[in-house]
Image 1 (spheres, rainbow, N blue to C red):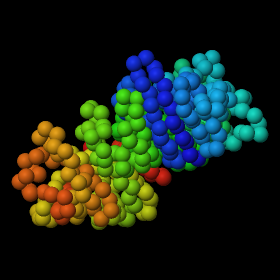
Image 2 (spheres, helix red, strand yellow; image 1 turned 30 degrees about the vertical axis):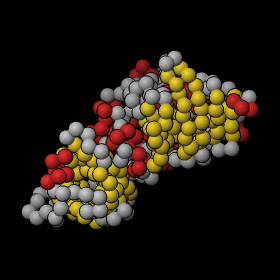
Image 3 (cartoon, rainbow, N blue to C red; image 1 turned 90 degrees about the horizontal axis):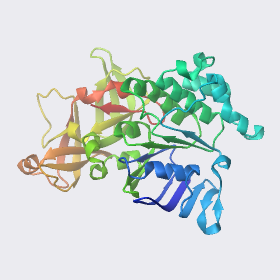
Image 4 (cartoon, rainbow, N blue to C red; image 1 turned 135 degrees about the horizontal axis):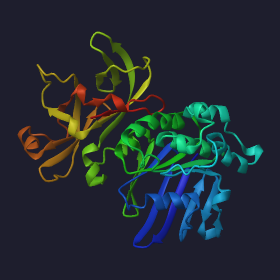
Length: 371
């Protein structure tokens, strides 16, 4: 289902002027604090009435200021998950889950209670009250409540922001199942590269109230020039690969890339499963000849497709590895010493230990993140 947003609105000093169209399963609104992400998702939800523009889901217009149309929030059939779970403290988990369902006409209900409970792993929590839940459990219940309202679109505004790292790791696999196992399109607000590179099928990059770039995750994540300063070091390439085989002797898994094979620590996945890896630009070294006597196991042939603008002592290279695009951040001195230029054949060298197994998942767009 396609989501079209084309709106203009002033909020204090912020001039919001955003246009994007996405048919992705999970579209991430990504950018630093104050870039307009939450304001934009509130417009989609109907919590803010824009001064001008349109919001269309599929063939249904929720906002069309030129036609004088504005569908109230309670009639939009959208699910909303906030930073905090906002559960009713006096109700059990089961009653919280069923709350949104009561407002959905029986003929329009499509969410199956048992399937949602199983997908989110909250069956053992049904009799508890929110005070007895962990932060991650509360968010899973909040997601379940939103899904059981059978929404046309699910909005998630920084749903992991209030959780510590342990709770984030706990809930991430459930978000991946939500993305992969339901047909509900999702708009997900975040300022974390780790989250959006792992979850998003498409990214809308926000900056100062404007859309700086929008498109598939693999393309947007390579635009290091668009990343917030605090996240530049986390940027790089995102690749979806297949498990080819397992090397039991050395505890490794071999993945198939366009440019060849990549070896990562042993994964508990079947041969043929899809794996997404995020390879940070700072983890990619460049060699002009195939290295010999090197401990790094992942050496991929490629060609320099682009050399970015010099940023202080650093410069970013985009490498075409037979169709898979990588990004490498090197020094200006290395660029000159190696006599690197667009079109030159090189080798991308990536250490196997650069991959963080904690960020592994499987599904339509699972991820293994370099660290």
